Every structure is written in structure tokens, then in C-alpha cells.
Image (cartoon, rainbow, N blue to C red; front, side, top):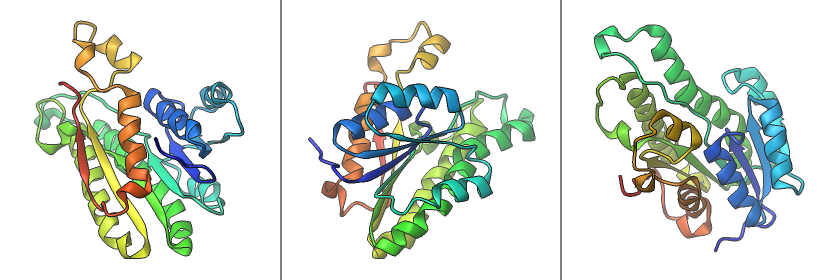
Amino acid sequence: MFDFTGKTIVVTGAAGALGFAVARQFARAGGRLVMVDVAAEALAVRARELGGDARTIAVDLLDGARVKAALGALDNVDVLCNIAGGFRMGPPVHETGLDLWRTMMDMNATSLLNVVGATVPAMQKRGSGKIINIGALSALSGKPNMAAYTASKSAVIRLTESLALELRDQGINVNCVLPSIIDTPANRADMPKADFAKWVTPDALADVIMFLASDAARAVHGAAIPVPGLS
């Protein structure tokens, strides 16, 4: 459906279920993959599963200096998919500790800041680029025992909107998707009694991400697109 032949696609969190699904879809569409994750061994396994000439970069996205050195060295980035992130349930707000708060903010917002800081200058130099971030449908309002998570994903939405306004006149589109529960092995293990058929599959979410990365979305800036599946 989409053709990314000759395009360089950076996917963070590429060793995870969603990150790998996104990388696989872009590879099938002809993209040159740069797969990024902190888990070096798992990343190497995923790259072998893809075959082809996918490049891997094992780096902790919370280490700003190393992220800048690793990703800033890329001479061009056509599409950046910020898939890396995480989820933790928590206690009520008044019992939420700083460790959980910082963990959620770091995994979902600080990691994004470090990656865009390393890659946006190359996009600005070329005058083009697409950035797609992963928010969460649950971040549109407060949820019990999820305050740190929803706050961090709300931050992703606000960062997306701000980046979009800052970069749209430079030929760079920035948008995000807001999935509900994603059908991954980890989520199935955590919620074994749920109706998995109502969840969003990684491939379905990857299709939306590919649309936002394509020329078909050239007029879309700062959107936060709900992808709820049937849930």
C-alpha cells in the first residue's frame, strides 16, 4: 500500500512487540531500517528475523549523550518512529512515589526528548521528515491508579503538538497515535481473562503509523489519532 523504497526509517523500541511490527511493515515497504533498542541481544535477534540489511543501534535512550552520538551520526532520517516506552500500574495519586513518577516520565517522555534532539537537526538540514510518537488513549483523561503513566503519555501528546508547530514550516510532520490496549504477549499474560479480539493488533497500529509517515499525510500536523480497536 505504501512505498518507502530508499527511505531511512528509524524505529526505537524495535526489539519489542510493537516496535518490531512497525519495523517489519516498513521493511516490507522497501524502507532502510535503523532499529534502536537498549536490549542488544534481543535487537540482534529481531534484525535477523527481518533479514535484509537492517542496521541496529543498541543504546539506552535515557543517556542523552550516547543517543546524540549514535543517532546524530546518521546522515539522513526520513522517518522517525518513537515506539520505545513503557507502562506501570501504580497506587493512588497521593501514594505515588517519585521513583514511579520518574520512571514513567523517563520511559515515555525523556526518551522521546533525547531521540528528537539527536535526529531533528538532520531533518531540518534536509528540509523534510516525518516523526510519529506513541501516546495512549488513556492519556486523554485521568485514570485511577495510572496517574504517573497517563501523565507521561499526556506529556507525549503535548510534546507532539509543540514539535509540530515548531517544525511544520520546515517540511517536517510530527504526529502521534493513541492506542488503547495493544495485543502483545505481555498484555495477554497480564490480563488473561480479557477479550483479546477487542484489542489493537501491532500490525493494525503499524498501518496507521505508516500512513502518518507517508506523503498521504503531508498536510497532517500535530494530530493525536485515536486507535481504539474495539475496546
